[in-house]
Length: 364
Image (cartoon, rainbow, N blue to C red; front, side):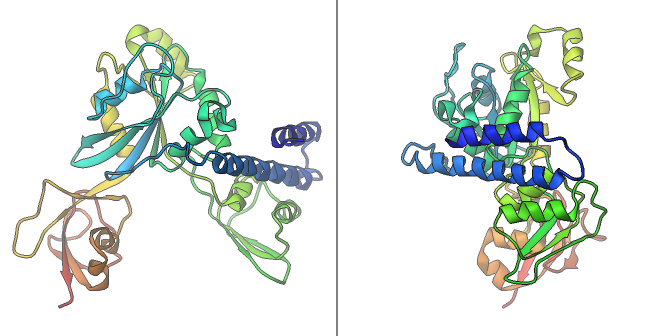
């Protein structure tokens, strides 16, 4: 029996099993088996396609990937928002390789990838889908592009992303699992667990070959989220949804779509409609901040900022510049919204704000 047949067989068993307190440990065990089999399928396919993969060289401050079915207008959109020249055609599968472009916005350089259109079954390997979707797994933002006349494609795209191990717009569960050699399983939590009991937790970790472990829950996670934690290979990526070609439909039609997809951004790549707003949303959802560096005795460079993730500290900024800055760091001075007064002296763990001006003082 192949992997797909095994997965189908287990899924059938889950469907037949009534879910209640007495069966939850059994269902947990079955779901863990499915997750392991899916991961095995991904590993097999990636090792079996050596030499045929997409080679993606990352540059810039962050990466976003355009994901959608063929002919939704990704190539036209890429040309609108970046310096790329992606082949554009009104027929399917125009893009047969991954086309990168750089979007310059608010002094940040954001790399945007136009990947070949995905199809139903992509995560199972159809149309080189696994390789294509693996690019989305390692990106900083997923931009789903839907055709205004086919909004139902969103369900297929979300399913394919989930099957490849991507959890779009989900927060990584705060669960710590420390395997031990002896001592059995010890479960503790800082929040009430409403989806899992100890028997189910033990049943799931046993499926992963763990019989002794300390497990700490800081989130009230579901069974599926706990299995994701044990897999240790899930990718938690922010996502925005675009509805392209809205110039071809009316307001009533868009309001109908909002009932099922409330948070889409309406655009027309062909007519250059709402593109500036889209650029702003890409920047905002990447959670970037710009830090302007001020060398001693000179004005701050306000043209070429250091771009970091929100929540970054002074020592993170040092690390991005050069390891010597980390090694010889003494203190820093900051002008901006993260401090109480201009030129305030701060230590390595000070959290930076967008558009802070930073001067790093090193040991002599």
